[in-house]
Length: 156
Image (cartoon, rainbow, N blue to C red; front, side, top):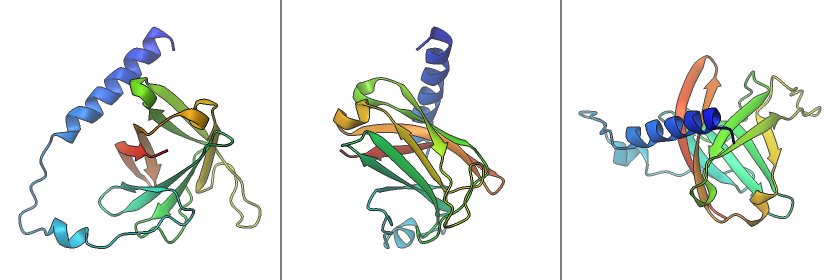
């Protein structure tokens, strides 16, 4: 990784981690009631909440092929949500090493999804075959709203 990219990625990650410590003050807002129900990932992957119950990202790793697939889903993880982009950029941190991943949009003729108008993204990387659990961050724009520095944790 060149030094300019490393500095950019490091700054991005440090800003995301600094935001973790901020307290959320919602007087009269019952967070416990909101989080009493759970959603099931349709493909058996890991769900990552985007926004306050607005959307989900499902991440599914195939350790045999080293493929990581992501789907954009609605707030209840029941319906796919198409977004207008050709790539989804993640910054993974396996073993504490900043590792950018560019997931490519996947077309699906049976649903009419096309590259640039899809809910599914994929990338293949050999390190995904052997990596243990890792965390990371991503940003995504869904239906005109940009969600910045969304954190995720992926189990092996």
